[in-house]
Amino acid sequence: MLGSPCVIFRMSGSLSIRGSEIAKGSFLLEQGLKMYIQDPYHKDLNPQGIVNLGTSENKICFDILRERLTRPDMHYLEPGMLAYNDPRGIKSFREEIARFLTDYGHAPTSLNPEHVIVMSGCCAIICALSTVICNPGDGFLIPTPYYGGINAYTALYSGLQPVHVPLYSKVGEGESYSFQLTTQKLEAAMQKGKEQGIQIRALILINPQNPLGQIYPAQLLKECLEFGHRYNLHVIIDEIYMLSVFNNTSFTSVLSFHDVPDPERTHFIWGPGKDFAMSGFRVGMLYTRNEQVCSAMSRLAFFHQCPGPIQYMLTQLLSDRDWLENVFFPTNKQRLKDSWKMLVTGLRGLGIPVLKHSAGLYVWADLRKFLKSQTFEAEMELWRKLTAGKLYIAPGKAFDCYEPGWFRLIFSVSSDVLQLGLQRLRKLLKETPEQTLEIQYQIQETNFSKIKPLPIM
Image 1 (cartoon, rainbow, N blue to C red):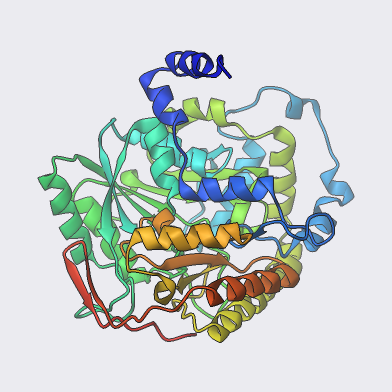
Image 2 (image 1 turned 135 degrees about the vertical axis):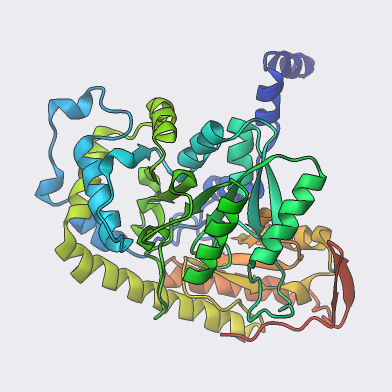
């Protein structure tokens, strides 16, 4: 015991200032995943373990993926797969990605494979891209709530800071739905960032949105691109859930536009982690027509390369359009819809509304009436109570939501796990007295009075 303080001192002294900042903390979604990994639920091996409805993974298509990934055409190895290769990605893989995104993004012309950069996940793409287009201390606009990992990843690499575009559940004047993004809100956030002395260099959009599950209308996307062009911003559009649309709702990819106002500053991100239920493969893709960005990203890609055999397997998978169209996509869509219905029905039984949406692997649920007070401290208290009761769901604070009491729950798990999660949620919330929502509180200079739950889907 006497030696412990010395060990801590030597460890902290061995790091740079940047290293110390990196080592000292993690964001909430990372903390939740770590807790789950240490004590995962298993119906036979660990029935009292943590049920994970907090990590956005698709776990309902393993059977059909296993069948496809174990076919003979996947079992192939050539010397080039074990050697150094193009850090941007093997040429045949980039060509197949270009064909795939041309078709499923409904691009008016064929995408150029020379403009495709492959890395070990979309997080690596965002980290590297923010590094090559922004300076330390610069800011990026982003509508909130949003995937909180973006903060951590961009800060670790490039020292960026987020400039929030706050969205609220209350439908404002001239708006038609909750948490609606408008260019007026972008303008207000841009002005606020300028007043704070922040050099804003980029606008990041996640479409379909995470954690809201909403799909941005085509007209709004065009307005956002025009906004970015007006302020000389890079517009980064992450469409990692583009094929995880489970209701009869149309999705418009930015790739489908015939013209964009500033093609040199418009960057598209996608990966198979969510849409193909294989987050463990760690593959992400950037499409950009900016030659300088391509050149810089190619150099950083050397540190984030994907294994050759993985690229080969995904080339086979993406090119098998018969299997995609007749097996995987229809099965995945139906299973997502069934699981979504199960979760929404279960939450309805608990009196918990969810935001209306039609994409993603999750619902955005309103648990405000279960908070002891309308504060983020009360939200974290409820979150700790749920995790102590062996149920992990993601709190709104993890997404920089401006209203305490919203949580993201994943439905893309097996039905037995989903039912068990709902049972644990029911038990834990039953022990928490409901608080009235007939209150007044203030968030970011916006008054919310007599807040009413959203209509249950």
